[in-house]
Image 1 (cartoon, rainbow, N blue to C red):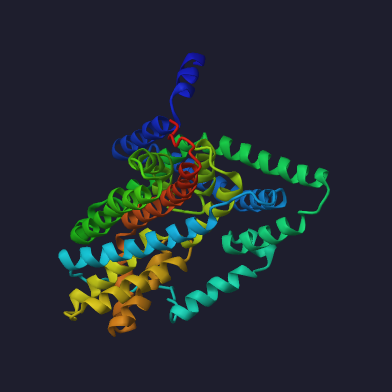
Image 2 (tube, rainbow, N blue to C red):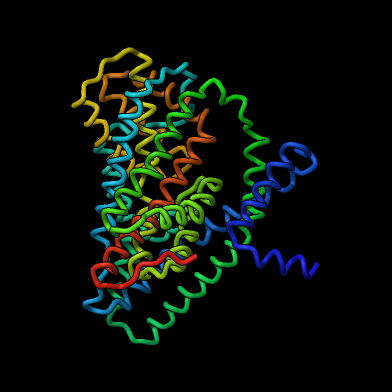
Length: 410
């Protein structure tokens, strides 16, 4: 048994996750009733990540800003530009893809007990109000915009504090980071439970009737991940972007795919940033911010399902309106709720651009929830892995300017 544990620990985390994934699939296929108790492992894993992420972000940001040395360069401006550019281009890819491969829907029943926002102003107003949310409430509800704003203010207020106080905060930050390492080591067992639960609960038979829609959604997201994002990264770092792109997809995208939560993946992303030797002052802010506003996958979902409704109803769309949809989907995506299926609630807002009634738009949302097993998983994987990708790209660009060697560690 000791040798087995020793050999298991020698394997990389990604290999261990893949083994857990296959075990989950095999158990779901051949022992769905007997192996049902393993579902709890998935819930425990996601629950632990979600529980530690808010307090981790608070202490990391507070520690980084309180100890920030004057003149030390961060890359937040470049990262925010990359976030916004990537989200807009993802929406544009989805619009172009929907015109090349138009999809019509068999409308489902409207989504129950959900209320979409009334307009873009309501989305942006909610985003701004989250900035001044009660700090305790922000931590409790994992409101990362609120957590970031209070962490930044506390960090600034502590800049003139005694070194012993800053050291204590730094020690808390390091301790939380170590706890994250412990939790992430349970990823193989957690993902085994998650994939088992997905297959047993949802299956894939119900998705076959929406096959073309799923192919279009996933195809657009894959195109963004392996074509658009690498081009953006290349323009920044001026070297082969694929080692970095594939590392982010492998080490961040896989866990995000199964947890289906950008918030739960924040500790995973921070651990990856540390492995890439990125600046802690930068990634401690950019990663939780990206989990809130860097939503390329959400922009794809909003654009594709909105244009699917347009094609279903036979509405003619000109190029100008399509471009407006790309911008609207990007803006809406930035304000998308962090909950599972949050981007779907913004579809009625986008549908209003074409005069589609709210009752029909809510039927489209219902279709979104049907395909959500795949759509939300792929969307989260794209969103979360891109947070690390753009954070790294901005820093590597600075390294290149300074003449430092840019190498992707294994």
